[in-house]
Image (tube, rainbow, N blue to C red; front, side, top):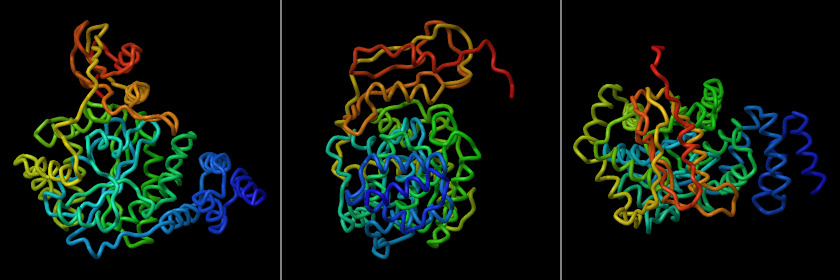
Length: 416
């Protein structure tokens, strides 16, 4: 076995294609504890550096999918849709879009993951709600979907279990930013849950896994092709991630902001959530985008979407009134006067991670109450001494300078 896995690693190191049998040997072997962590880490790094062909990517997706069971979607009553984001700083759109679409009568069965790299995971965010249950059997999950219209759970040993172990290893070994690995990870989860219509929010920029529009388009093309091979409609939407999405970065803080948006808070986070919801609703119901957007706005404005979020959390045993954030706050003050031209999503995410909102290694424990809240946004005029942001922390370290460094303040903003 030692020689076989070494041959597979060396083939990929030399930019050679791996057969499906070789991919199965390595990846299923790792799932079954026959391949060591360091060996799989080497193979993942070789894939990151040298890539994979479309055939290899489709094969790996199929291997991940068939490592477990597939949800019996015939038991779900209604049109089933799914939404996924490739990850961005402050991206809590799932917590907004799911309730919106469920309020409109669609069924949203969502299998979500944890944080990856600098980006927070939906499961991590929801775990900041005391008591919430995110592990279910397939039958229990389907029952939740039918009852509420929106249900969300963590990957189980039944649904794409291979992806879960590879996902964790990628996050701990610097092998996150690989288009074939991202595509196979996302699509194996989406295919396991079985929705016909799958919207993929492709985040692009310094605060995302994908740094360039070219990478995003390549990933979109790959996932569309994978979807077609399984008779699924994949709808890619590109959105920018140079600036944090919304004001709050950090698990509990992001849940709180999602609730605020569902209750009427304006801004880019709400606008993007409306756009994504409208695109998916229009496609799934075969109506015009303008009509879809009108209906989406209606359930936001009349409070139905917020009520659906509360129903979703309560159905999964969560207590929204018990969410806690860190009590030690540190104001970050502007050191100059002018207009805010840029807020670095990457730098804000790094501070949040250092505070403990995510994991740097597998054994780390997440601090759900820490993070950063932006008090000013792009184009705002500030004076010296104005509060730019607040740091929610449980550590003695002072990250004020790091947060301040994320803000670029200029005398005037030039028209682009």
